[in-house]
Length: 256
Image (cartoon, rainbow, N blue to C red; front, side, top):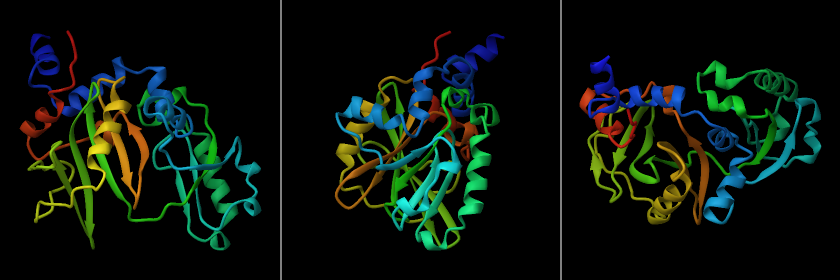
């Protein structure tokens, strides 16, 4: 028991150890609100002073309510209560609406909190919504934040069939972490134009939590909030060596 406590509470706990502890002991309704892709708009407005999420065009309680005629030529169909519940529509004339409704119906019957053992999702009232289409291959920056303090940011890079993940500190210095995938061989990736503002937003959005990943997109002239992620990769966030996993976990303070 003593060794277990030292691993979890002390300096040797890994990122996965502490994420799993948070799942069991730090689940709360506020996390559910912030994981709800619809209610996140209100949280963003309260914390930042404005809604920086992608615009919601329609909200439905059932897939049967969808009227394709009232939607623009491009949009994204989503469910608000999980991860990966997205149907990207680049041309609605090519959408198989019947198949899309079957998929949405299946999503609506899922309790993602139970399915993924991320229990804060179980607070969410399941809905379908339509979000504006903002393009593809967007630059997505994921800030790892600890008690309101962003410490690391990583960006995923795809080149052909190869996928890379580069980590940086808050001065955009490259960090040689090998987590989930290898860093790009050239190491460097262009610093975001709005990097300082991204840091400010990450601070404001993460103050209420021991740990949260703030996912931000950089568009041509603005920043958009993708989501707040409390358990990245369902806690299966592995690195090449244990020292790096411990380093990522250091700022998650768990008191005995």
